[in-house]
Length: 595
Image (cartoon, rainbow, N blue to C red; front, side, top):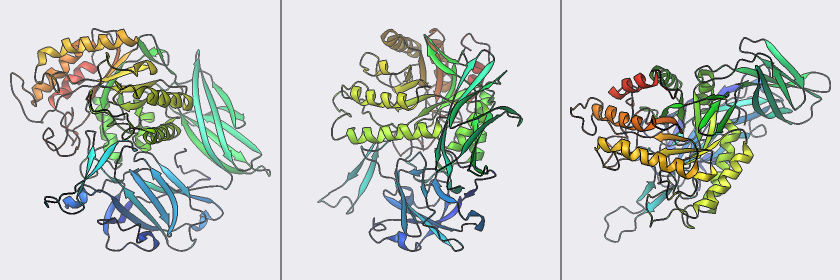
């Protein structure tokens, strides 16, 4: 799926801003066809943003079910005789979209875009109206997974119709239109998609491309431009390759980008459509105990993180993205994982530009109860419907992110019950579809089980593990961390013989809490805690990365173990450093055998 761009042929109109908004308190909007006319009894709501933290009402923050968004727009006169596409960057987690009262699209999945051709639904020269019903309910057919719990209480302890959303993941179920809603145009005969892969031969870069063109065309011209705007290659056809002599490679910390300009021409020799696709020339592979980028061993230094900030929630915030990237560079990080869902396209494009390496993760989180007796992969929980949605999410994520040089690996799930027998056919199918969709990148699954009970590690290329010794087990016992971590790492490597990334390790820390000797929740404890893990990592040559959990404090549902959110951040939610940030900076910016 191509990202909407402005150029000499295509135009984009951003509908971000203040929309009309209404909470569907009694689940009656669809039955009463609220989309058939202008919404009534509305309040203003920002798009993109989560709606949960913007008002002062707990009933809105905690609402389960539909909410409604609406705004009007006009089509410029210059858009005559053009295809007009309405695109939603994300809607968490289910959405139905109407234009002028006519249904235009339905979508399931809260972290990937969807769009509709509305050319025949709009009225030119007059006001048009887009209405979107967004539903945040999660069940076992969704990613992430969840359950709606209803209360039938004869004793009257709960109000009639009372329900709660049960989630099995540790981040707040922010809801709404989290990414921009855009109108864009294409010609009637247009470039539908472009797929780019790259290779390196000596000092030359090889750019292979495949175009999908809709409608008739007489010629396709493809030009490759360097970052300075100089043409470095040209060819014709819907597929082919270009060779760049003395190529400048996309490398960690140096995100050099070329531009692949694709142009289509009609029978009269006139240009019909064009699209400029950023291209980073780089290779990735896993071999033996190492991960290679451009044939150089790469060690992952960075974080798991969230799209999460004050007031805006999970909504796109370009300023926050820039701040985060500046902090990542300041601390010496070179990578992050999109825990636990695909992040915004805008952030991915920024990672391309800034040279930050990304492990891209599908939103398969919450598929584990950490119990040998309470199974997850069974008919009434994770089943064929879940798998169908999982495969669709994988395919959509790859379709969106396949051309990003920053993406070096696909993560197919986080902390699933990989000890269960039924998980084997499930993830065998997920891996099969992922490899077929994109054979150019390695695959991982983020594990939490012990290696002795895991059944899935043989399917993937890299072992990622989340471990919290000294926190969720042997709480506060810093002296045991190195010993436990050594056993864990050796267990994984001895079983599968594959390189290992520690994709999560961390301790909740309240900024400003200090104590010597260190105790849990103090800043001193967090620093010593990380140091004990690092002693283990540095011993083992098959360890190829460390991602601290988490980059910054983030919102979670209320709970006895959460003090207004998860406090494992190295930075506060306001992006201010805790003491451990300086310890990590010292480690990651030092001379070290692993990097």
